[in-house]
Amino acid sequence: MTAGPSRPTGESTVTPYLYLLVTMVMFGSAFASSKVVVGEMPHEVAAALRFGGGGLLLIVLAVVLRGRSRPIGRDAAVRAGLLGLLGVLAYNVFFFWGLSLAPSLDGSVIVPVLSPILTTTALIVLGREKASWTRVTGLTVGVTGALLFLPGVGGGAADADRLTGDLVFMAGAACWASYSVLSKSLLVGVDPLRATAWGTGVGGLGLVLLALPEVGRVSWPAVSGVAWANAVFLAVGPTAIAYLFYYQGLRRVSPSTATTMMFTVPLFGFFFSTVFLGETFTAMQFVGTLIMLGGALFAVFGNRLARRASP
Image 1 (cartoon, one colour):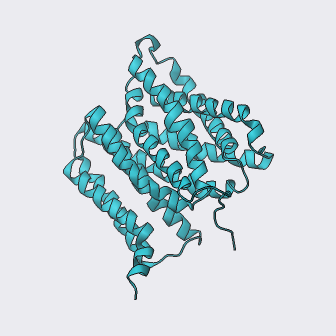
Image 2 (image 1 turned 135 degrees about the vertical axis):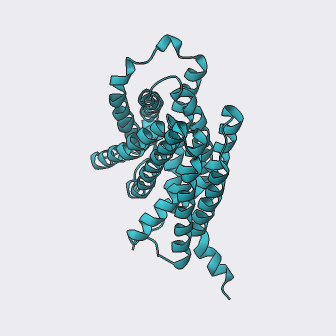
Image 3 (image 1 turned 45 degrees about the vertical axis):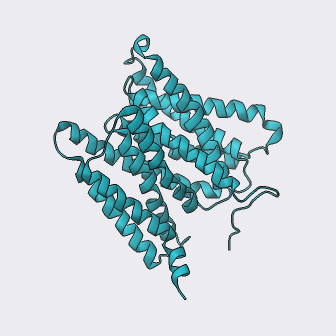
């Protein structure tokens, strides 16, 4: 029998949720901001700039604050690096590839809503959570919503690219769900700053290596100041700060609870994508979004509602 998430003495029970909420605001803004950057350079280069810079910032911060944090052992460093290959390298290959094909609005719905569905499914399969009727029903409804979302894209060459981008976003959601489930075992007794620095640094290095063949395609003098400002913001906010805060929150709550907070990302993503980029949904996509979100919420919270309703 494993112990539940630990909480340091004197820390409020609200604190991990504040960490996660700030993370979700950052994640929501990242879709629109990243879309601006991939509009002026290959998606491989955009991803490398975000996580190369973010990883470097976290490494510097870990060195500066090394006296205030526990050293990370070799085994933990290896595990953090491997998780970085999954949650940073693999996830962002799909994330930025999807943004190069589809609107950021699609990604801001698919990734945060599908991730809890996949996370809960994985925990049930692994035997770490029970497969109650509420969860099975919610997961089924959520998947149905996802299947409606895709045909809602429409037809035509541009819509074909959008459909491909949405499928790529789904692959990214699978990477993030796996990252959330596996990260839980890494965080036991490991300082979150050092773990984040190692994971982001390794993943960022992988993204830089992937981007090297594409660097020559970029007309650097033509890259606008707006794109550079967004690249800097992505490295600092949705990467360095958000990943550190996500680790902090995940140390105190379960993976399914942490990914549940991602239900707020579509709200933030919708705001940034519509206000700053003028993006919109089709009617079928909107219906699919509501069904997918409803199913995901029922899968995660259905058991609690059933227990409260029972006499």
